[in-house]
Amino acid sequence: MNEIDRRLAEREREGRPIMVGLIGAGQMGTEIVAQIGEMVGMRVVVVVDVTAERAKRGYADSKHLCETVVTDNLDEAETIVASGRRVASTNFQVATRMSVVDVIVDATGQTEMGAKVTMDAVDHKKHVVMMSVETDVTIGPILRRLATNAGVVYSLAAGDEPAAIIELYRFAHALGYEVVCAGKGKNNPLNIYSNPDTEAEKAAARKMSARMLCEFVDGSKTAVEMAAVSNATGLLPDIRGMHAAKSTVPDLNKVFVPKSDGGVLEKSGVVDFAIGVHPGVFLVVTTDNERLKEGLVQRDMGEGPYYTLFRPFHLCSIEVPLTIAQCVLYGESSGHPMAGLLSECIAVAKRDLVAGETLDGIGEFCYRGSIDVAETARKERLLPLGLAKGCVLTRDVKKDAVITYDDVEFGGESVLLQLRRIQDSLYQ
Image (cartoon, rainbow, N blue to C red; front, top):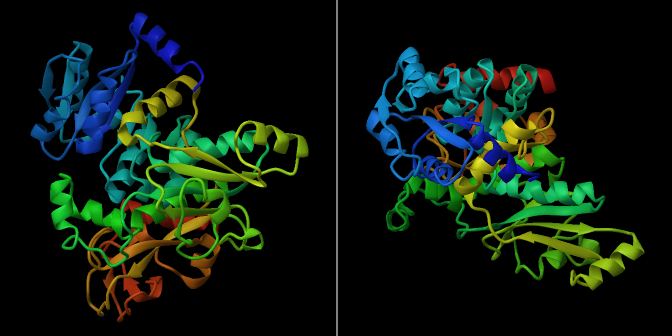
């Protein structure tokens, strides 16, 4: 992390803190505001949500105390912030276009909204921290390309599992180790037929949306997260859907290794996830250097030939301010897709679907997310998970079948769909 703490302290002393615009004041967004309130050298100056009351409430737990003023007018917002106050708004362009804002955090969790927010933020030379990984795995390469061309950073968010895995990957890759597998522990039981009704009671107890919990339980979120890791590192899923093998932390370097050495993998250099390991993210690495093998034994890494790097926590939104600082202070991301998609998140029917149905959203009743190699997805015309919502089925799709472009008509044009078409034309 270089000297983030010292450089933030310098900015505080100099009276030029990093200015943040937050879009989406739900659980994740409000935690970001609260965490920044504990820090020096950084301020949230505008919070946007669907209602002014929700936007104002986003500041409730921040120790950076000052008056909050509601406005949807950009000129008024500029004046308010210049006077030392802060803004609550329902207009996301107040945040993306405010002159003093350095970084936009998209915490909306909405794929289409993530596309709109990023486009406008990049157009106005703002760094973007993308918390909607669903947006990233759908159109991340084109968003990152636009950001780079504008001279700003597009980044996944520290604390989320993709960025935590990428952090480990960068460590191992920089040292020259062969990465056999990058993965995460599955935090919830896996039920691929989960829906909001089956998760309603548990969701209420955890004070979260049943749809959001379902996205975790049915495996969609895991597919999305590991696709993001794949697209950022070049590691690929070993098989469609990944292995989802059971393991403990000590056994990761025995399970997520090639079959020739007693594991589950057909090849090395993959993404996957473990049932029974949570919380945490991991890499399984190897080296053919005998001196380094001796050194790893001496450091209690085991006898080899495979070694586990394990990060036992990921703090989600609580870590996001580190990415904000990284973007501004160093011009670097916590993770971003390379040119084009290497892995694709695809939509798989949870039940028998009937021609004429309109597909609902991720974490709902119609479909779940899975993962496959992007080249396979292109050849088989598999429908990207992020584009499925609102599509109308043109023919029946059986339970457990993958939904294809040929099975649907799009419900209408959108920024997301247009960007995806541009991305496909650039990176085919």
